[in-house]
Image 1 (cartoon, each protein chain N blue to C red):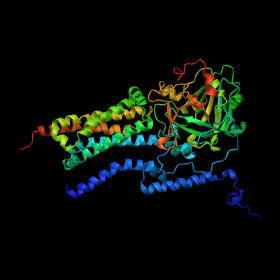
Image 2: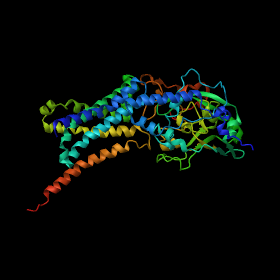
Image 3: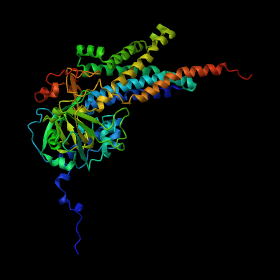
Image 4: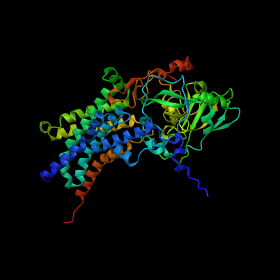
Length: 327
Length: 206
């Protein structure tokens, strides 16, 4: 009688995509070593918390097949995966920067689909697996500038949102695109009161069609970690970070401007356009400079660039517009 | 309280008060201040200043409640001065790490950004209190005048809390805890004095 050996026991059968990448493994080691060294001298609250309930990036992520892209940003030092996954604004999972890495584990990223509706030829649903295969996935490094005054450089994975929009077949009166994020009311126990959930963001049609606008499914060559908006989000690199909606479940094509979560919460602070602009201050702070995450404290500050440095590609979208009024 | 106990307590309070700045210094030297070191320095020092101010203001009500705790007064100046110490690092960190020592930026910020305006005001109000904290100054001013001047601490702590609230985004409630504690302390004073006068005015059995 033949007894089949369980697959899991045959080590050589594990596909390479299931293995923890080497550099991540070493990162984890150095992280643990650093935490131990720090802990030996003094345990601060956050370090203690890290030990008691470790964050959830250390797992066997699945590698994505990617190709190079001419639209990638060069000449910038990448922000570390550790910082990109432990310094997040994802209010559904808590308002502290460290909260999402602890709390976003419950986000059910499979099965997942994006429902497309509104001013389209016919409503459609795109399963996450079909989205991953729709176009070749590109490595796209972009600067990421948060409205709060900090910035990162992140190697995203995805393809231009315009490729998906073409598949959606929008009608000619579709002037805006609205993105709605996942919200079940169950796994987002940390969502603060006073906001309109689910998270809503929007772009003008020409902004959404700009090749820089990225339908994003990964970072650092792996699938998106939950706290960074898994399994699929958009990245609009010339706008403040909150415009780049995470964990998208619905895309609506509309003939008028959709309501957006941050604009509803504080219209004088977060405009619909929210283009990165060093000349237009936030009412409570200056936007002239930014703090680059992961740099030492004496070298963090950098000048903020108009359109976050992507003016060549996007400035023409706003010809004749007063960007002080349309902040 | 005997002398060895007092000395031990003082040492412990010093260690507790120095803990935040020790953690920051260690983090700065080992380049281990987290993803946003500047933000970490500002948040840690600001919170330490506010917490120490609130602690220093808790001492009088606690003494009124339990006379056995009257020795707490020996720690009030220490807490107040440490609060000023952290508020000063907080301000210096803004000057160096946010404004990059640029006077133009600072003037604009103080004039235009209300959370910075009230923050600077809160610190300015602490300066005369720190300067008159010596035993000599108390003698020179006289207890009554010294007390009047040091009432400024209430204004300063309120501005400090406002500074905190105006800095966070709408809907973020992290400043709530310390605000509630402060409100309780504010209400404790009139409540305690009312309770005392009521007790003393009640007729007692002969």
